[in-house]
Image (cartoon, rainbow, N blue to C red; front, side, top):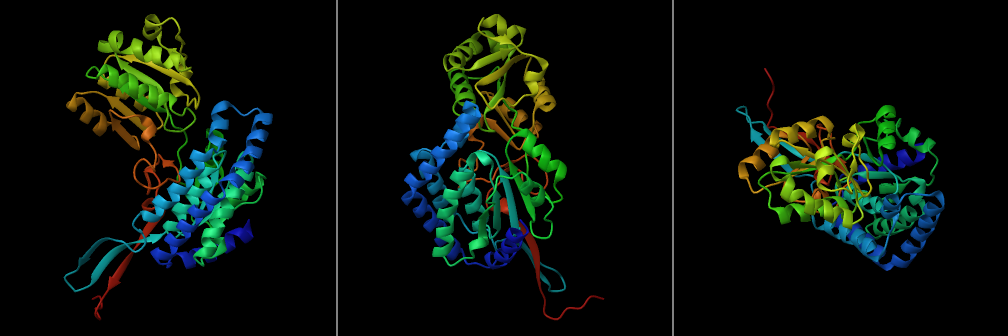
Length: 412
């Protein structure tokens, strides 16, 4: 781990001044290699899938792990999209001239070395590696044992991209072991790693938060809410809720709790419940919700604080906007919340008064994604309030410095 860190630190110095065209050449070559290697990548992923099935991984976890042709192409397209973004390094964020003639500029600079610790999603290898490269950072990627073969195969394509652009091979490195001790070592490498990004379940993030001596971009959980307001269009509500829960249940942007205004519960909620149940979702509801559909099972107090990452949703009927927001503040994780309404005033109150990283109106929480935000990809969703918040893309992977130009001024 120390050798990997030292090599990454040296690579980061080279990447910090690498021209945009060179970084884009590496990204394009890596994307081309992924497309050319789809069969090799899928074959190694099949090994991981078979191992995961033998280990008894849940269906949502296997879905996270799986790579089909469309997902491999999505990785390649993500790299192309990152290459098409403006290079953030060197961008002037603000500039001004002081009365004494000093010209001061705040300029974007790379963070340095980014360590990414993730679990079963092998696509993180391409997304994180590509984003770090574009932002002029070296990346150390430590994937979970479930995705080790897949991540290594994807890394081969990234390495081909670095070689094609004559960039240091250590610009992107995959930790070649699933030994958990490697994570512990990473979290102490303050001399070589500048920031850690954990992407995984609650236990992983809790461990990293507890042990890391390095600053983090993190979110602990994705307890996302969708609120059907009294002013909601019923068809829009049904379609959005179904997508927000069931499109992919194992992602952090999936809705886990549905709140419904009591004034429209009798008309709007039954079609939503029926659509969810028909799609194979278990619905856990309060007493009022269960009175509307016998297939709803009782919700416990723990359900309001649970990120299921599965085809399960908790449903509560509330008195109105204020109660809905109070519930979200009490039980949410400040990830993503959505209101469904045609009432502009209610929508603005929801957007302004909730302090989650992402707030939405009339849209599925599954859009909580850097690619969907036009960032090319994301390294994760940060729910903290320092430096980066929401999808972490190339701009969020930079810091800044002040560049001061004078003509001989001295301070009196």
